[in-house]
Image (tube, rainbow, N blue to C red; front, side, top):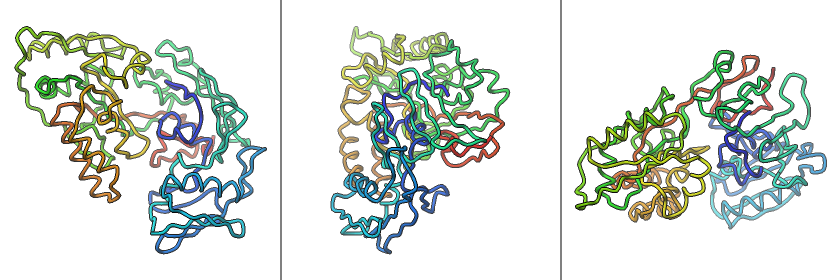
Length: 437
C-alpha cells in the first residue's frame, strides 16, 4: 500500500494515529474484541470470567501463541502486561495468579475494564531486536522498518491469502508506484491522486469517517474572527479548497457525527463587518497546503475581500513545513484549513488542539478550557456529552474554528478478495490476515 507518512516506530503507544493503527491491526491483537459491537470475545485467551459486580476479572492465556519464535505468550507475560496497563486504568488494582490464570481485582466495580483492554494501545506487546519495532500476537510481524518502506511478513504462511504487506512512502501525484499493479491498497492517498485503473477495476464502498475539516481562525481580535466565521460561505470555501472532492457531509461543530455531542447540519452564521482601526489594512495570511486549488482558492478570497473589505493573502506551504510550525506559538497564519481525525469516537482528538496552549491558535479560550478540565474528570457519559456541547458552543461563540465538513471517502479493494465483509471500521482498517483470495 501507499502511505502519506511512514511512522518512525511500531508500538501500541501510537495506536491513536491512523497509519499506526492500520499496522497494529496486522501485528497486534488486544485481549478482547467487540466485533458485533456488544459482546466481548478473545482470540488470545482460552477462557475468562468476571464477577457480577465487576470487581474481579480472571484471564487464562492461550499459551500456544507466540509473539515470535523467541517470545512465547505465557501467564508470566500476561501478568506483566496487565500490571503495566491496569495501572493506567485504576491504580488501586490487585493481581493474583492461580493455575496459569491471572485475576485482577478492584475495590469497586469497574464495568468498563474490558472496554479498556479492547483498545489497541493496550494490546500485549514486546520489544524486539529491530530498533523501534515491537511485536504483538497478530498474524504479521515487522520484518524491516525504514523511512521509505515498512515490510510486514505473516508468521504462518497461507496458500490463499496475503503473506507479505509492503507499505511504501507516497511521494505525491508523480510517484511511479501509482502505476505499480502489485500494490493493491491505495486508500491512504488523496482521492484526487487515485489511479484511473483502480477506480475501474476494484470494488468500491463509500464510508463516512471520524474526520472533520475545519477553518482555523487565528486572529486576536474577536470581531475580525466573527466576521470571517460569519461571512465565509462554507459550501463555496470547501469546494474552492478541495475542487476534486464531490461529497461533503455538513457538521455544526468541530466534532464529526459519530462522536457523542456532534450534530449534523451547517454552523449558524451571521455576516457582520468588524470595526477595524483606521489604517489597519494588513491582510490575513491564509496558508494553502494543497497543490490542486490555486485558481479556485484565489478567486474565493478575492470575492470574500470584495464583499467584506477584509484583505486576505494566500501563502503556499508544504505539508512538511506546516507540520514544523503548526503546534508552535506564534503561528505564521491567521487562516488555515486542517483535518482533525480519530481512530475511535474520542473528544480529545478534536478538542485538544484548540484548547491547549501547544495547539493551533495563538489565543486562549478560558471558558472552554474550564469545561474541558471538567470533562476529563467526568465518568458519566451523559454529563461528559453535555460538557462537550458547552465546549463546542464556546469555540463557536469565540469564532475560533469554522467547521467545513465531515470527510466521506470511497474505499477501493481488489475484486479477487473472496470473503470481503463490511464491518465497523473494516473499510478503513482492514485485517489483512483475515482476507482470502
